Length: 299
Image (cartoon, rainbow, N blue to C red; front, side, top):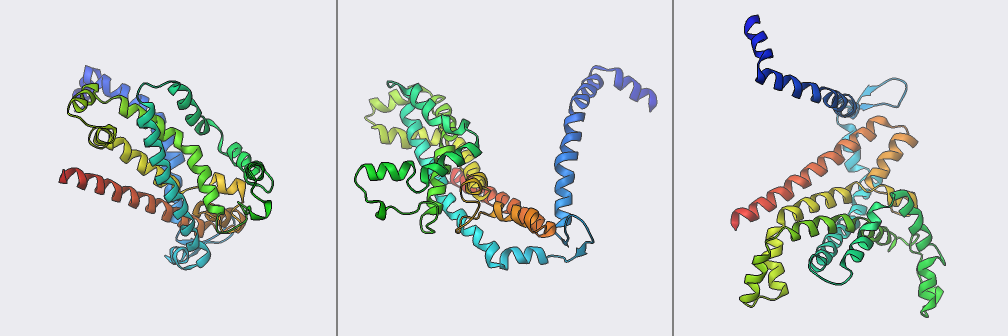
């Protein structure tokens, strides 16, 4: 057995596997130490009532029950609805502009740069920019008064509970539309140009080309972007945290988790919230994948 193993080690196949294992060893160790072990610990902590120090008390699924029964925790899911709607608006706008900018037009590279630039800006910087944009007598209010809107009729964009989440989701749309745009443009430009020529000969207009050529050809990219957009809508953190600190009904699920863990030091409950968030993301991803595959099967 030892002789066979020695021969295998010295063989080309054995040397190849040694090289592969050597290159993968450090990344795998880092992944296990900094991802999988903390994740396993988080699941373990979610079944305990505990802080950072002191005794732990096993409480079973009580932490999970609290997540879905306490009004202040469950209400944060309602805030995600605004970002869900914003995610679909973001995708629609990105697909619209990508369909236009994928073909020859004057200044298209300039427009691509303008639309993609917000994605390159740090999230904290964007939060502060729009904090001054939406503040009373800030940029937006100044523009509205300039065109004749009385200041008394202008709402408080970040304090009014009826519109503050709409304002925040607008910022999210503005920031992330650029990355969707670039991905869509790359997918559209990979479509064979002969398909457009053939459709024009058959008398197809732009809408028919989009519906029957562009959309079916990029459905994989659309599915991926939709999954990322929905995942982002559930796990929003930076923008509402910087701009409102989660006040006036703008607390998202992630902000509530952070507050529970670091302000109230309820590590077990915060761990349960993190597990719930992960399960929700996986569940929504699975549903989306099933819907797309089911649609493909029907076609």
